[in-house]
Length: 399
Image (cartoon, rainbow, N blue to C red; front, side, top):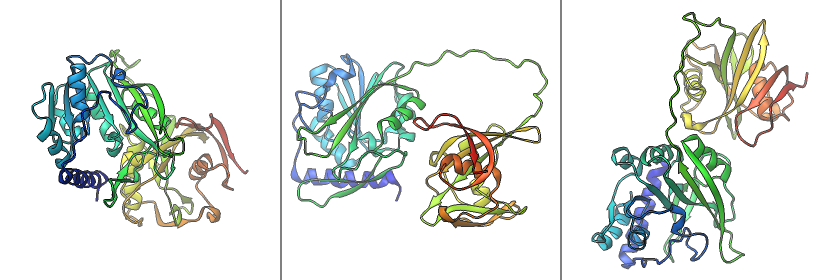
């Protein structure tokens, strides 16, 4: 079942249970970003929202939206995908001036709505794929508008945030009822900042909010971001009408690591290689990885499943060779030899028993990824893409 379908199912059951209890949370007199009263700032982080259109993402029972309308004069739209959670809010607060509720997917809703002046989510945005939610929020907010989110940082089990953009299982707890499994993006602050920056936001602060009980394991993040203004476009033109002289070759190589080991195939010329190949005109590096993976192995991945590691630069007979290493963290299917492809006989190899005869580019990618691997190859200059990785260096292998 797709991740977000799992989440909507869980929150629908949760809302049904609360409806059966006839429970509605009281309207707060202070906006709390966590379930712990008095921890962290209040509504002031949204700025002056008097008379402004504010989006409540995953509005649940609607009590936060009502507070902002009554206490701060905001015009609040609560978006909720769960039909039972929406029922709780609309059946109780439908007549509150300045508040409206919609049962919609927030991404689909924002594609049709007028841009908002501010948006916030209290513990809810982590249930939506950030690669889907953040570009929709960028387009759904006016330039300069704030986006404030509280998100899980450390969970009930003491597990800290992930360093890859991937969901993991979390549980919704409600009294003595059985816990409801969900999938949630619990990411490190730097990773959230990278995502926000990449999708047109400026992160102004990320605060960690701790439980009042020092022995409690749960920690929340509070992210304060702002939608960047639209950049002014500057014109450009070629120097001449003649195309540049070709002097470089650009390719990609993909690392797929499973419990069985590293995926490698055999080229018809005898070398052992990672999946990969030449980048085509107009193609992103991530798209090139996805395409080459499908063409060579029949494995299916998405660009969002690809994390670029960096560039490797060397020279071969006067031609500058640029290789982009990538780590693919999710895929579908089983690798199989494809007709008319140069590389086949795909197999998984333990990292401590890699075969001899690795293709030079594959060897360079592997030692850039894992410098401890005992692989010989000619040197290449490696420049990493990801923040927090070591600075540019020369990858020499063991030769």
